Length: 234
Image 1 (tube, rainbow, N blue to C red):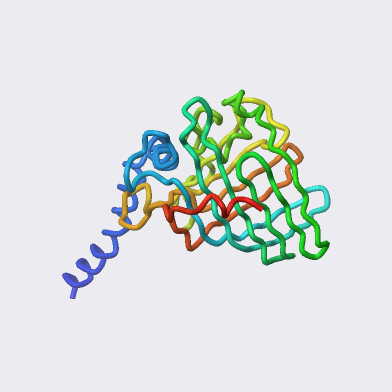
Image 2 (cartoon, helix red, strand yellow; image 1 turned 90 degrees about the horizontal axis):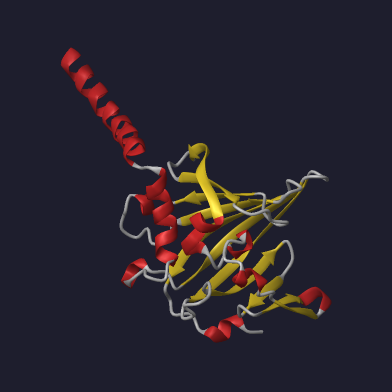
């Protein structure tokens, strides 16, 4: 009986020891590399992410009013890395089903916001000054391959969530009116190189200087579907 008890205890300890070993072996630089590498210009083959699409959940908090607003919908993003002298051009489409139906579309140069309830499209041009200042933290979306250039990256506290994914805290290297700090949850499976874990970023939380926050969680993501440029025009 005692032998069976000892064996059962040993089997229970094996997963715990494996987790402890994983925490020791995975360093901050490993997680940063996992996050940045797929979006860098020299990424090759299946390791490179040229586009992605999927579902998202968003929760925004207005600190002064202590008010939450939740939304969800679909997102598609495509990167154009052909311009060697500039950061990649990021094209995107956010389609909200909640709390109200709306679309935010950009070809990287122009943004269109469509509000069906108002039967209105708001068009504005993107300010390219950020491209002349590659260390500006507002290049977050187009600078996913060079986050460590734009941000000081450390472990968040705690540095893992309940599922074992890794949590990073990023602070802009230069003062920004939009971002005070940024929290990114990086897929544990992607860090450990598990099959099928092609997209490293599970969620982002942006805090502005007024402590307002917006969290976006991604799900059902598909990468490198050769999305058409026409999808990012209004």
